[in-house]
Length: 308
Ligand SMILES: NC(=O)c1ccc[n+]([C@@H]2O[C@H](COP(=O)([O-])OP(=O)(O)OC[C@H]3O[C@@H](n4cnc5c(N)ncnc54)[C@H](OP(=O)(O)O)[C@@H]3O)[C@@H](O)[C@H]2O)c1
Ligand SMILES: [Zn+2]
Image 1 (tube, rainbow, N blue to C red):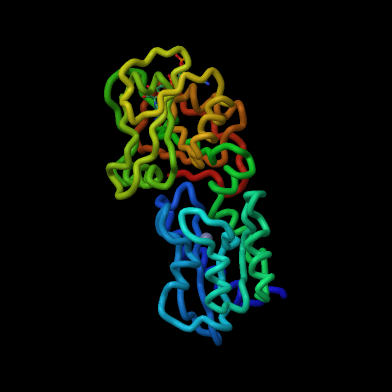
Image 2: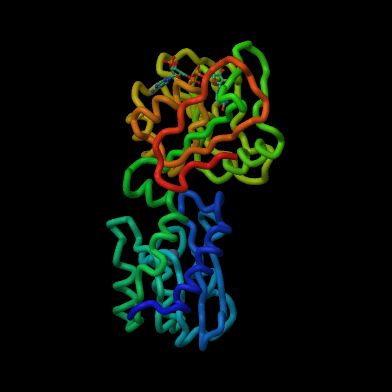
């Protein structure tokens, strides 16, 4: 009942397929699936979009005789009726004889039930293959489930000499076209994006992903004192007094990931409360000489600081 080299290889393929859904499956996790029979891949699938088929269903609804095959999937197959019927039932129905999985379902109400259903049907189940890699891939989903708050990415742009804005008021640019496109791609990958009331007043940012193809995140502005009027109706205009309250509201709305885009005061507030998982810093090539200093990069686990 242990994993061998081939199991690791096919699980890597599942993760590679899963990531193709990035930006479109939220709030669902990224899931890929591979079906192998007699040493040959006979089908593949991944969860492409929220509300559409799960990875296992996409793989098993293809033509083919899957009896006696091994099914690889990076998340425990579901056992309940959601937007689609349970994948565990389909796996049993198709005559799969072995299931190799990466991560258990983190939801305590469903965890273990998918595996129990498979085992009850006589299917051999191997768990926790490439578990760390799977958690990394679905870090937004796992953070949300375990910490009960969105995965938080602090993001800012700074001039070559470390300023977020020049001293003089008016339009200014730090990022070049490639950096802008990258930051817009980032926006397609996360559920929401937030700025402070001062940034809203100074810059009137649109916070859309217009320079990249994909979904826009939910735009949010924090306005403790209620200084803002006429915030566009599709924005979430929050008048919370604390970030705890903000996190609580986002949890209720099932917002699993959040870009904190500034300004300095808001970034400092998130840093002071330890509310961050990742930092993405865009560094421009011009010097400003003076202005609003960018925050110091806070302590982060390895691999969680990205300088673009
Ligand atoms: N380079 C970049 O990446 C970048 C990104 C964004 C902005 N900027 C620049 O940054 C400047 C604005 O930065 P800023 O530091 O002055 O303002 P800011 O961080 O955008 O907004 C600060 C305001 O947010 C409100 N707020 C709401 N909830 C809060 C909380 N829990 N903790 C702290 N504040 C909270 C407070 O005002 P109330 O109490 O009135 O609500 C506070 O004064 C702009 O000039 C903009 O151009 C640069
Ligand atoms: Zn499913």
